[in-house]
Structures are given as structure tokens and as C-alpha cells.
Length: 195
Image 1 (cartoon, rainbow, N blue to C red):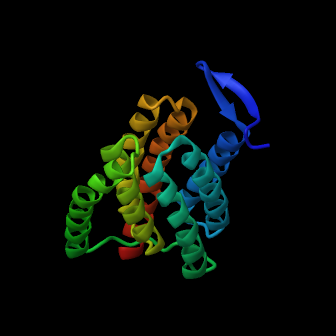
Image 2: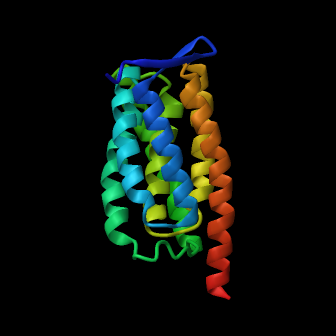
């Protein structure tokens, strides 16, 4: 059923699975910009669907990312109050830790992906680790999560386009625009709460 081709765009066949994963992901990410708790069930479903699709495409780091997103979705659902996110900034120390941990893990993990035959090793590792860190700081309600999502979405837009996954590349391009919206909304809410 999921192998059913819904349409072809740019000589690229879009399956029911990829389309459904894309639509539910777009809804989840947009709801994330609003800080509403309802985003988390959408996040869980979209992540599970994309995990299946990425497995077939052999983007193994992306599979791992999506499976972890399912777990983080449950965490976010339990951690956020009924009123949703209350954005706040990371401390300077927190920002430094995020950057150093990201760089160290990126350099350490990429060779492993090469050993298992994954495609797009460096960009997929960047996407995996950047997404995980962004997800953690999103659950912790820090507005900087959107800056990291922005960087991750740009890298993955290019990766999926180069890999011929044009529809998913387009989805990630839209995620990039949504990340800007989330960044602005959460930053405004965080600065409003501080003043």
C-alpha cells in the first residue's frame, strides 16, 4: 500500500508513504512554531512514517534520527505544560556546550556511517546530530532550537536533492522557511517573557 505511487514530479515518483510523511511533518513543524502541545502527536506519527521511508532510501542516519524523534515526541508530550512551550534563551555556557558537543560528535560519528555503507555520510551525520540537539533544546523550550533547525534543514535540503529525493528535498526547503518563522515567534515570546 505504501509503495503506491501518487504522482510523478520532475521525473520523480512520489509514493503514498513519502507524501503522507511529508504532509504530517509539515503540520508538526508548523505547529511547533506556535509552541502548541498538539504538535507532539503529529511529530510522532510523521517521524515513524519518515523512518520507514528513509530506511528504504538507505539514509541510515535519517532513520535513526526519526526513531529518536518518536521517543522525543513522547518526551515533549509529557514535558510540555498544557499551555504549550514557554520559550527562553540558552545561557552562554549552554550555547558553548551545544556547539562543542555537536562538533565532537559529528567528527566521531561520520566514520561509523561510512563503515555501514550509508550514503551522504557527512551531511547525513550533520542532519542526525543537529536534529537531535535541536530536538532536545526544543523539548527544553529554548528558542535557539530554531536556529539549529534552520542549519539542519538547509544541509538536508541539499543532501536529498543531490540524492534524487526531490520531493523530500522540497519538503526540507519548506522546513527551512518554517524554521525562520519558528525562530522569530519563539524569540519574540522569549524576550517578551524576560521583560
